[in-house]
Length: 244
Ligand code: NAP
Figure (cartoon, helix red, strand yellow):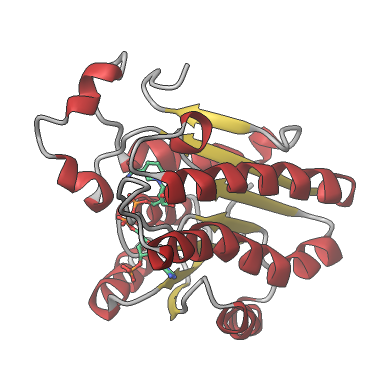
């Protein structure tokens, strides 16, 4: 039963994260979501989720900052009490071919996409362990499995997230905590809007279309629910067949 549980979702204002928040809220899960900048989107999301009858609060917090995440997690646990679900969804791209990729673009992507997940898990795992229950879901990418031209930084962060997922799963399995990763292919969000309508990647996708944030949210819902209680350390592709 998800009703009455509490979730922390990073990057909950837009795209996949916004949809994950909605999907969980529809099942009665209270939501604390993190975002980095867009206050307007955060207030709109609080309203949308609140209208679904759950408690919902946005926290401005850069997931790349160990200290900011520590403070935010304290605020969240004070406000919400127990936390049963953590979705590490916040992520960025700073694409360029290796020869043009600046050091800062490499570091920023690793800091947000990979260290961000370390930060939230590091500060929340004592809560999970005390409860002897937790569902951690990390949003990786097929790029972390396949690599991609122009995405050395992003691919490294998403592959790193898979190693982190499996290690956390091994460390916490006997303590009642599941940790899994979702590896989406190309999903129709702001992140992929630059690829354009005639996205050449579509030809490479066996299903010949982009995925939707809604489709990702359904998989996350499954991993957050008791239906997946015997699944941990898994990486589930959701990519229309792209990386098979
Ligand atoms: P998006 O539309 O660009 O949204 C990114 C979200 O992350 C926003 O809510 C943003 O908040 C938040 N965020 C960014 N930097 C942050 C930071 N430093 N601290 C806290 N929050 C931060 O992205 P998306 O397409 O929904 O992607 C969501 C996740 O799925 C990412 O991890 C991405 O790598 C992964 N993914 C996406 C695709 C795809 O095709 N779209 C494919 C595979 C994997 P603000 O609005 O406040 O900036």
